[in-house]
Image (cartoon, rainbow over all chains, first blue to last red; front, side, top):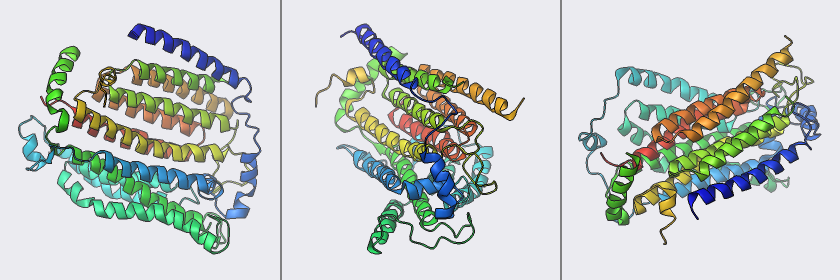
Amino acid sequence: MTPRQRLWLFAAGLAGLIACYLWAFTGLPGFGHYPGPYGPAILKHVIAQTNATGVVSAVNFEYRGFDTVGEEFILFTAAAGMSVVLRRLRGEREGQGSPADDAASRPVPATSSAIRVVTLLLVGPTAIIGWWLATHAQANPSGGFQGGVILATALFLVYLSGEFIVFRRLSPVALLDAAEAVGAGGFAAVGVTAVALSLPYLYNYLPLGTIPGAVSSSGTIALVSFLVGIEVAAAFVLIIGELLGQTLLRGGGRGGRQGGGRGGRQRVRSG
Amino acid sequence: MTVFPFLVVAWIVAVGLYGLITSRDLIHQVVCLIVVQSSTYVLLLGVGYVAGGVAPYFFDISPHARAVDPVVQALALTDVVVEAAVTALLLSFAIQAHKKFGTLDPHELAEFKG
Amino acid sequence: MTPNAVMDVLQVTVLVLVAAGATLVVRTRDRVRLVLVLSVYGMLLSILFFAFQAPDVTLSELAVGAIALPLILLLTIAKVRKPE
């Protein structure tokens, strides 16, 4: 099939898809007229039932906690899968020198002092903000997921300031694996503890506190959010660490000789 | 205004799929996949919006204020973070494909068997 | 203008910008430029989510789509780049 025929086939398929899509929208109430009973029902009862003023986190970790366990394990599996997929192929070996030696043959500009100062200054505040977000899920627009990503960003800033070796030393794989397991396993364990207390899985069994939205309120929501934050941060640092480790490998594996030929042809076409 | 966000969602899906089909680079294809996925976030939040509603956080406002739907926000929130990890997994497949076959062109990769 | 009208105008503007941003992302072919345009698209999306009264999703999209994803993409591009 030539590319043009493929394009026409795609256009026909896309037209059908968009037509069905737009037909489906005629059955929706318009934008801004949300009728559904689920949202208003939750909004009416959330403070009485969970003492949490951050309704989205309460929905995430309490009302729909089972879905969140599943999503967190998707994250866990993706990070674990990366370390399996990016294994060393035959013929690859870790570069002998430090990355600075390998880069010496290429004209790489040194990191400017402005970038170094700014990124190193921002590491502390970013870590504090990420920590605050992960532990205040029940009150404000915070939560484990965004807190964890910002915590990971604090570590990336170290890498961006040019201190690649420091980054590698600050993120040992064993510690990150343990942190990720504690986060994911902790979430599942909180649910299983509820079962051990002869309650439904992931039931909110910790004391709910008295002031809605205080840090010690809303029972398991705060605890689970903190564990999720640890897990997400560890997963992201692991992912970046895997990709950085790839840039240190030398050698070509099985397709080394083929790589030269095809690489040459591709360079001519894109040049 | 009652259907404009949904039209934008349809446009983003169409544009993303077009980029996916006509791409000659695996990395560009992964980015088009990200664009198509972002359209679902807009759709989710557009469905749950209440005209004149505020964000569903009652820390400093009365619990009886009219708020937008919190359930779709919870769904979109976890979706955004998990998508990044799955995209990283896809990119690691692309890296291994480049190591074994030397090329990132999907038309050429389709010709290899095994 | 009433607050509702102001919110409507803001939402329509950002929706149009998001649609234009998606088109731009798809039309860019150079890899490094693609990463930068994707980062801008992520920021536009987070502004849109903010206009839809969803601050949680704004934070997530900003941290992921404008910071973590471009970093992951750049590292992959560095790995598959041909040695000059």
